[in-house]
Image (cartoon, rainbow, N blue to C red; front, side):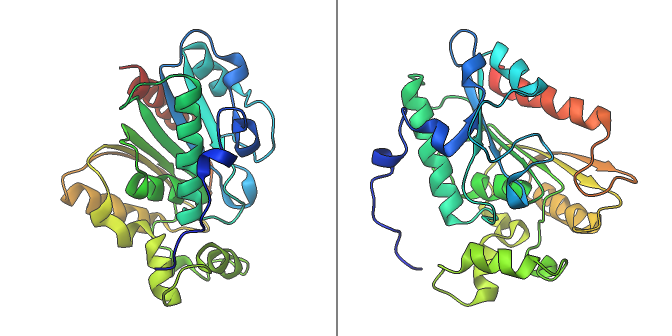
Length: 253
């Protein structure tokens, strides 16, 4: 494996520079910060969960609801084609560390990760590789088998290659490093909330079914919601609501 780029994360990513590396709801926080929910971006920087790779306030309905209850939401800026790669994990950990320092959070503070599509992969890979103990992972319509989906869309190969071009290994092996189904034995024993889309035109629901089965075979606590007829990135209202209720619960309880 190639060596990491040598620089001190904290010199660049610290309490003062958080807004340069994440869109947050911190302007709306009420009271002490109880915990953090990280959100990883979808392909290109947007997210079916609501985030956007642009500096500024995260101010949609759920971000404001979280802030009111002391939950800090961090929508990370790891680059538009990250696919949960090493760089995305390192940057996310650095932003979490900066936020923990800024808000004087104790060791073992409540932390969860979320994301949809590429962000769903990012959430699962962050779960596998972060240095922090997580309480939960929320992944919507994730690409759980990257090699199987390499050519799903004509522009996918360039994005996957961009994500792993710095990995010192064969392409197939590098893609497996950012592929949840190939990292199944690296997943920690936490709560998983996973949703799939029945009419997903990018990532077949059957792949997600298989991934959930593999997690459950290993004894993991998985809540799985299949959404009949939904296209990629769409939500049934009840699934959207349930997901955010459980996000809040995992931080506050």
